[in-house]
Image 1 (cartoon, rainbow, N blue to C red):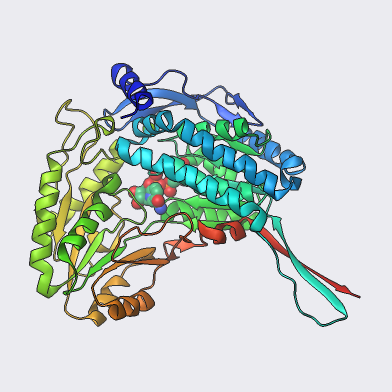
Image 2: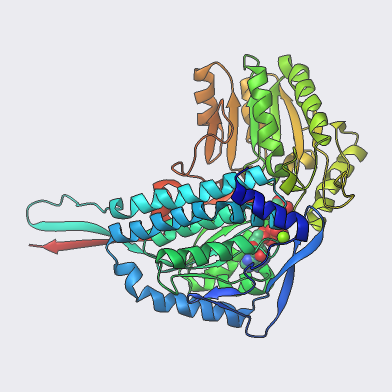
Length: 499
Ligand code: NAI
Ligand code: MG
């Protein structure tokens, strides 16, 4: 551990919080309290206790932020030479790295995630800003061949003010992957982080200002989804919405966007299958299954929450995964101690996850390991759930069809590839899929036939910021990351001149 990191961890462990956390909205380059002065608490999932307060925003606060963003749209940001905009975004990346230790400790306190995962998220956020910094002056249009009497070309114009509704499972990562391409495209933004995890988005906005992003270009309003979130997505001064969260809220957001014809990208989670064929390297597959479902305690939209395994290797693989999950249960703990697995993000979410497993057990589903709420063994506190494996589920089981969003692996068995594809596609979701096999021909056939936004072959979560990400079916539409995200935040204008 670096001395910087040690210092913040020690302060957090000694006091339960950190001094100097942001506690107000970030609007027009300044920290501002809510118009009505209301605040709310954010909790540490590792203890269940409040550790900081922040502004509970309402429509009036959202209004101020959207106005600031619209004013900034006429300011220097959009007309800045793209290479210069890129230099500013590179400075954001450097400032994220310079503040990595503090950002990671705050993310762990606020979301519950393990410190090592939080550090990974911070590093990823910095990489994201570097990636789009480098893309600013390469976001070029086309010239269109209409013959000698015409000149025709396309321009990429910023869509305008972009709203970003951010969930609690990857607060900084999701903020960065929305803000960086939007800013690179010349947009101005208003972000609304989840009420469970408001702090790192506020810190990111401050770093953007420090790096030279002009005041008003990057605004953050905190508060509940019902108040601040709903006011933001129905605001006529917003030109694009990027929403990451649940399907039901996504439906509400789409409805709110309709009257203003606001563009949107919806990233709504999934029930992603990880397929293991009989010829796969089983220990490599087991490693990947563990990461796919137990990283961030399974609270990942693209978690590999369904293991689809060939009958010939079913017992062998599930026994391996079960033994490892049972061992992981012994190292649950507060994220700052870097345990094997951290808590779930909220008490309500803990009970939602537990409910899925309790109902499965009552239906007679085999619970191979786990299946219980279990507080931090050192303190008796926090919202922890045991790593859980549900075996041999039928295709229409509730646990197979619905997103549990916790450390609960659902195993399904297949006899041939046709059945594997049917099972893989047999849910309302289509976000990602993993395929493990030594037969690359089979792998690419499966990649062709599985209805998902991305397919990982022999490494779950393979890729990074340069790979487009998003879902099909009820997992949403539109793509983030990669150069596709720049297009999400741009409007194409075609210009044709008769010479
Ligand atoms: P949610 O979809 O209600 O919350 C996500 C974000 O939307 C938060 O910032 C929230 O404040 C905001 N929000 C809520 N209602 C809104 C509205 N009417 N208008 C605008 N913004 C609004 O999700 P929640 O309740 O936190 O989690 C429920 C389930 O959603 C989870 O159990 C999980 O299955 C799924 N989920 C999926 C995520 C993903 O990465 N795709 C992330 C978080 C949750
Ligand atoms: Mg919190």
